[in-house]
Length: 175
Image 1: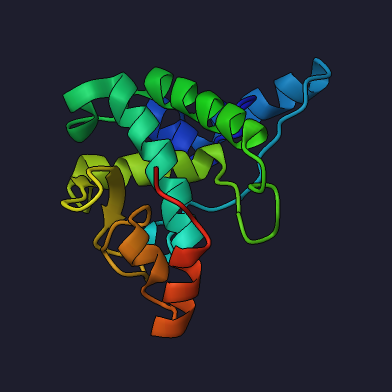
Image 2 (image 1 turned 45 degrees about the vertical axis):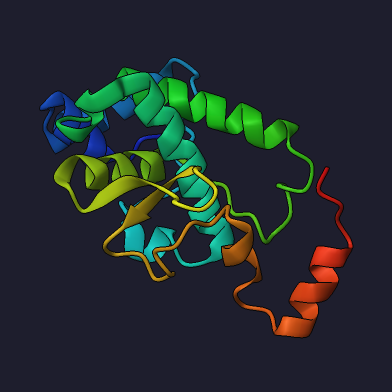
């Protein structure tokens, strides 16, 4: 877990190790020449992770992958193996999707993934199905964005005025 980038607190929660034991493990890994690649130092929740339309899409993509792998058990406990596989798939999808590398699209790290999975497990978050487009999306009671579907065409245009929406619609043909 340390090599995957989890923060100390999460390693302690998931393994039962003490702070000193985790610090000792970090030291041993570094002495062996291995790099510990933590991207964040703190656990965050939906309030800080889901703050924009694009961050809601990022969270939805990652958590849908996790839910598909872990199944209903994701609602009862965090499956670290399933979360790790989902995170690897999420990274691969992002790398292959044009346009997701810009500053507008902030990639979630493995600690963020665990925090979102913890919210899903605790019931503070859920995976909803959009009544309009039928896509599944992640929503947290703590998020700072609307609870509507981030993928739905209506949601994507909701922040634009009517003229911009009409221009947007006329630029695409729906076969």
